[in-house]
Length: 373
Image (tube, rainbow, N blue to C red; front, side):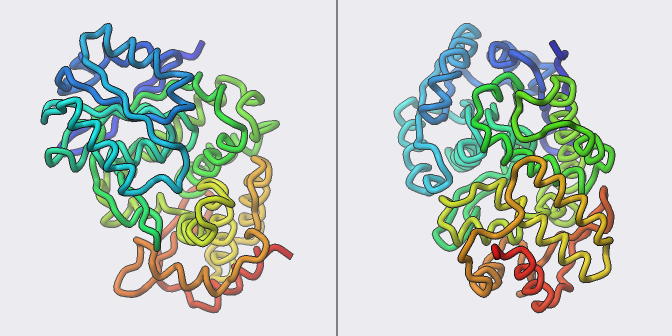
């Protein structure tokens, strides 16, 4: 079994550890009391936020670990899915926090994928003006992306993640073994974020993914490769977040593929494509834009598309999508600055930049190129 690895997210106000630990769920309680892992241990009252399916698989182990360590645990279960990532769900967490008498020293533990992590984090950021949150991601996407960096929030009917706050966790605990119960489609969704890190930051990771025999299901990945994927992805995000905690500059590159991806998600009602699938489509579109602008080569763009296809992710827009509606939706993106849509575009495999110098005609041409024929 692969040994536990720790990745530090180094921040001025509150640095924290990302623990990548097989069977780590059973260590959560003791680790929350270990000053070498968690700088400031939370108080005794903990609210565990999850969804019924995840809790059925792993809830008892997490609760047992926490209670054995002396914590008093209450549970709040929310329906799964992006369409429930709303203020109504946040209200349910608040109600549970009130019923369990959470104090400023208390903690919310998020056990689930990115949706649960985002909502639990936002509730923690706003309950009593901010209490501790611990992220225990159970999807690949949440492990390599959503659980780190402190972005929390919910969706507005007109756009994704428009309501939120930055709120860093005390600890991120990644147990790779929980991926065994992750549906194949959700695993592929997480691979979109892994490929993203290869494009914007880590060319060697990209090449290791290219060399793998299969990437579409976790059972085809050797344990060592999975550990490499988790560790290198977390290191990339930790490095970027440490340099730019609140997305004043560099951190925006982590949104590679997300500009058009978020528009696709929103316009399909968060039902037709999941987040990773939308990001995969968005990366292909960004690749086309970068080629048109002479920023990278057609060969590099083709390598990206081939790797995305290797994971089983879509590389074309869903059938019947209105291209003009996508362009219009871009104006609601969080990255818009002074009315200009900012795109993250690759310069080579391993580097990317943020630019608002993308003509509308180029965007339209890229969307046309990936439209379902």
